[in-house]
Length: 597
Image 1 (tube, rainbow, N blue to C red):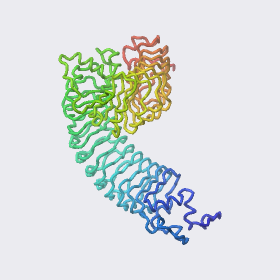
Image 2 (image 1 turned 45 degrees about the vertical axis):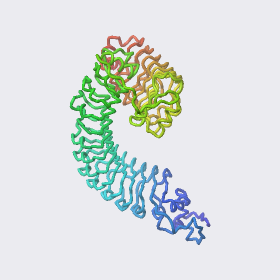
Image 3 (image 1 turned 30 degrees about the horizontal axis):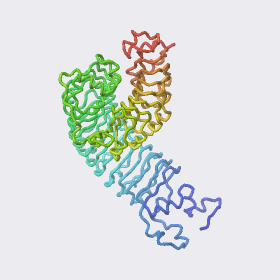
Image 4 (image 1 turned 120 degrees about the vertical axis):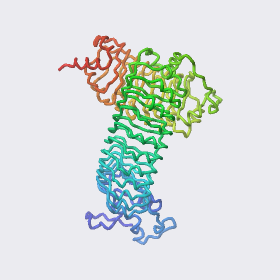
């Protein structure tokens, strides 16, 4: 096939191969006719080339030049384009010619610069998946609501102020993500989306939720975090399939009353809840995880024992001064987080030893010991004598091998968890000298890891590949540094490093911007940089007790997000011990008063 090298581009406009080649190699178009799939992601495109739209209409270049075809190259037997990927380009406008691809089932336009969409999008009646996240969309064409076969619609990170009233026509939609927009309300037809299973509304400006949500009886996950919600409609309890409900960072004053029969995980951190009421607690009949961190709770009621299915309770950063001994009677509780509370009557060393020791201490205050369980039929013995609790692995997504004083984790344990979406790993109280490399097998699901009470001298960078981590417990090891790659853990909220060998505040923690809790007590840290600490805009708990701080910089008082700052047991002279003893608010006020004007 001859090539033309003339400089006048307009005169060669009809030679489609030549104009398309710089961004869309002809070989890709040819392959797309056979496979029905075309991937043009990340090619710097500012518009969709015309020959992409006309892929199934125009005669191929070879046919025009009378090239003979083999059996494998019969262009007249081409497949309609069903999958078109155009993500991570610089496309500002989508042409009405998109209607020339009626066979599309997947259209991916995420991470572009689209500010509007053509009405012709509504003609793609076979479309099942439409990805439009990370653009600049202000509104959606009403014609889009006629896509009756649409299953997944992702619109996060746009500039949407409202959704079309006809949105309810998308009756086959199973996944909807409109997070990180500017929505102040939802259309009244929202309850008509009866096939929805996963709904993400977080990071908007919603002040209320419509009662019609109750009709979404197939929704398993609902995320309403980071909005302006002051209450949750009682009708949400009619969402019979609801398993995970996220209500973080709102303005709730009460725990919602939600007798949803399948609700297993409830996240209500960073609200304004002051008390836990019996009526609300008794509704949570199937709850496994209850997150109440960063609220204003003063008392944990005895009725907490009604939550017999509870495995994880997060009460970090509240105003709790005492705990009921009956808390230890919860049969399945294995994670209890209490950092950042002004607890009295429980020695600090007991709190620092973790959930097991704390519950053991509380059981000692209960008159009758609860009956011990034997693990039941779901546990099995392996040749290595490691108990593998199949129930924990499959139901709780927990992989535990704790308090064995073992130098390594048995391979059989990892084998038993293969193909499971493990969320929590507990390998504490062993003799591990390195992070088990097979943890990477769970990198798509692992959110919490406990390697406390081991003999780790260094923390492998491999742990930084676990990008879903929100909580790391490395207490009571021999660490003196952390890998710089840890700043890649953009979801990490808390890290426990007490009783290690840090001589300075780990640099990488200043760069891990998602952190809310840093526990670094009982090390040898000699200074902290408040100017870098202020970059951690979510940090609410900082424990630097029992270190070697000779000087407390007054600028530390400008870290206004801190609700709990522990500095006792350091050799500094000012502020005086009497001021430190008054608590965080008084300490921060004192520090601010010492800043030179």
